[in-house]
Image (cartoon, rainbow, N blue to C red):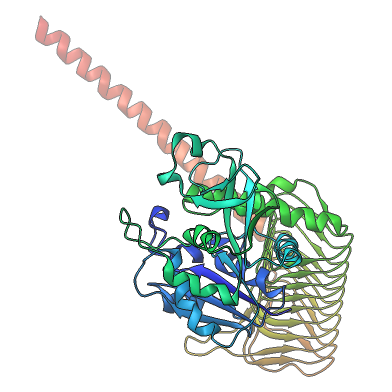
Length: 492
């Protein structure tokens, strides 16, 4: 089966009110155009050609290109007929079926296109189009049939009469065209009202030449939503969201509140995992089996292995969390980290560009940056790895079975040897040998009965103030009496 895919993606999308080309607006982490190209790729075509326009460079840079994707530019926006015509030279030696899809229809599925192509080939048509029944035909082109049900033409909404506007079978914008019929594109005439060449006109041209054509009413209306406005984008996003969630439900994933969850189309989730409310799983994240992802967690481009627990309000970016590890609540795993098996990263711990060994614990209130931390290490509360000297970042190495006491500062670069202990409140500036005790404190001094003397001194100050206050009160009273007597004398 010889197949080529052509994506019409040159539209400016003015109604999106954005400087970004329409096909690059994203749904669940990927551009709309990417969804369409990925769907065509599943059909295993010989080639896929994307017809792009004004923002060609930006589109090329934004796409994750499969090997068969190439681009052709429509330099002037002259309509869909002209756009497809630009791709014809790239099909010069191609003999087979070209399937044409719009780049702003991200919800269309491989299953629907495959079923459509099967019908097209079974009937041995030269040209087929995919239609559907619209609840509200709106701006869609109407499929016009004769009394025998044969397709005669497609009438655009703006050109439709009152009677034609009532037709509910509409054009999806998906075509199957045999390579020998592509020459018909040159016979499409410009629409004088718009100055554009409509691809839909190829239908009546083929019919007038006696070619075998038809329209196949396949698929649901939701698949063919064309995104032209922000409202369309929001609607498509909602439909995509529940399609993604439905897929993972079928694979054995439990969602406590599916409506509040965001799952990227590129993410993977293992069987038996539980996803709690307000979770965002973004990018190419992979979550293993039997994991628990608690509320308000965001995971970006990371790997969470089997049986891991990610607790409330945790952010994980471009990192790996190994089997049975626990992260959170309120933890931040920054890019470049590996959290080892059975490790624990707890409340308000920030980890950055660090390797955390298996069975290691940092339970609360620590910063671990640019570090290599071994197996079975205990990181006490308030520990800080001081990795930046104002000019350069340095590595700290903590070997196996080390105990770091609370409120310690490790000034990088430094190595803490295996089995050693760092006493609480220490500032470590030099390497610590294996099995050593490292202390960095001012010597403690106890002054006996100091608090009693302090209390006695404080009471003396209070009593003195009270006595001064009493003397002042007496003096003020005497002075007031003298003033009163003086006023009486003046009246006399």
